[in-house]
Image (cartoon, rainbow over all chains, first blue to last red; front, side):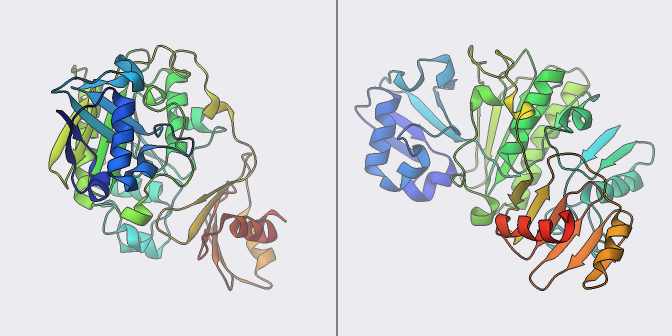
Length: 90
Length: 287
């Protein structure tokens, strides 16, 4: 089981800010499953070319993807995945 | 010394969320940086406050942000933040990213040569129109205060030499969560590793920005200029309703109001179309 925490901006779109998913191989797979399950999230998570949005920051067990293998980082049972949305507002 | 930089003027809708201003600032149409400096001076006359009623641009950024120990980001757009990031890295000045939207706030200190920079987190600004704005989701005042408290705590600790764990903090008053993540520097970061400061070097032409949540456009000329507002007011007053002071010219048009500063910047109030705003500026100011 992979635990995923979404920023509250996505809470309405996914009905919850805390989601549990099974059978995720890597982060790219997780994003595609999130978009499949919650189609309203697709525009938020992916850009017009289908790539992860530039202002989307993801950490696994507190470690950002930049310290791991990026979007191809493997996921294991029990992992906690946090999605952060960098904000422009002020 | 605290240098306050803001391109805006105080408006009535600011009073419920921006604690440094009052109704007199609105009626007198005072630039925000000047009003803030006045109010802060009244609280503490032993401190020095320098007001800069200016927009941060690639042309003036090094001058406005240079010579300080720390830069505090209180901006509302990524364009300004990418510019701050470039200037801070090039001048070796730490800065603190702070942002708030709806019930969420983010804060992260950026120390050149030591921590990740903004472009380690996000290499390029997101596509135009993709991000939620205060126009469509609003800003919750207590969240602004909460995330500013995180930023000022970092600032005070950094300025007094107290070590701090550097992390990206996310506060959320919808879920009552406080999350944080320590972001490593990117080995191939174009800014802090490769020293490519394209946001500091770029931009041409008149910059037009639609202001968040309002029918107002901000215009900023490419080059620094100086306009004698009284001379211009005399020219315009023959046909139009004009009010002028040393710092501001107000031009009342049937479809909009133009607030012009001596450095050529202007707010066009009453319309949200940037092209139309440029056209009005060109018609009444540039000519």
